[in-house]
Length: 118
Image (cartoon, rainbow, N blue to C red):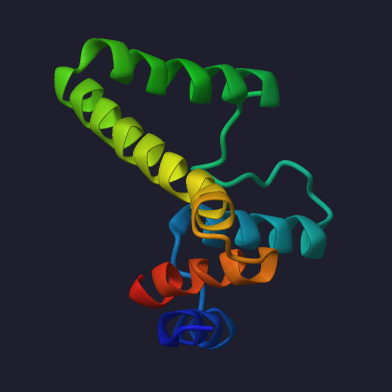
């Protein structure tokens, strides 16, 4: 595990929550529990159903992809990069096994260089 991963785990366990919607929802839940009044709700709580939230989370990025040229260009660029990386990693084992005659375990070890480089 990397140093950043360890730091994130420690921070997750030690630091307090600071996101206002979560804090307000916790406070509302505590007040509902203590008073027995089910009317307590957070001001930032969403009234949308899960279906509406799902539709919104699909439609909003699609609109951005189709209507914003910068988003379209960057998405295309990243898609080309990921496609190239996938092609590279998919052909590693084939090339080293078939062309250079590596064993299966030897061809698998070739991936360690890329992992160490990252």
